[in-house]
Image 1 (cartoon, rainbow, N blue to C red):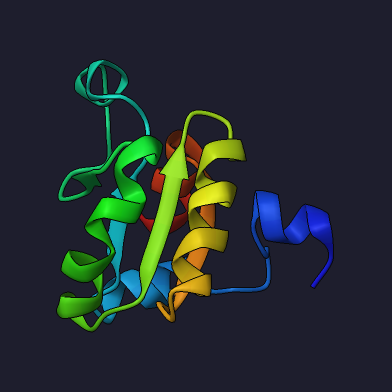
Image 2: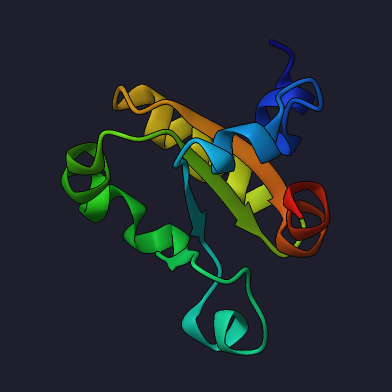
Amino acid sequence: MGIFSAIFGNSQTDLKDLVGNGALIVDVRSPQEFASGHIEGSLNIPLESINSQLSFLKSKGKPVITCCRSGTRSGIAQVSLKASGIEAYNGGSWGTLKQKIL
């Protein structure tokens, strides 16, 4: 996997199928950004808190799709989640992800 696909997501992954099979959507923006609009049912775990929530996310036993405003923070979160053994995908911006999974 190249650096750009690691940060900005792999377009070959069927995110809609993952969500349909129970994947969690984790929005890593700030609570204020999240409040201004988000994907229904997504969890808001700001990037700076992601490492403190690893046990919680692991306990769910489901793949995680990360999203943010542009895809950069979600890419960083994805790398951290994968390093912890969680199946994780970078969904990019929340608006684009929302369009992909509808």
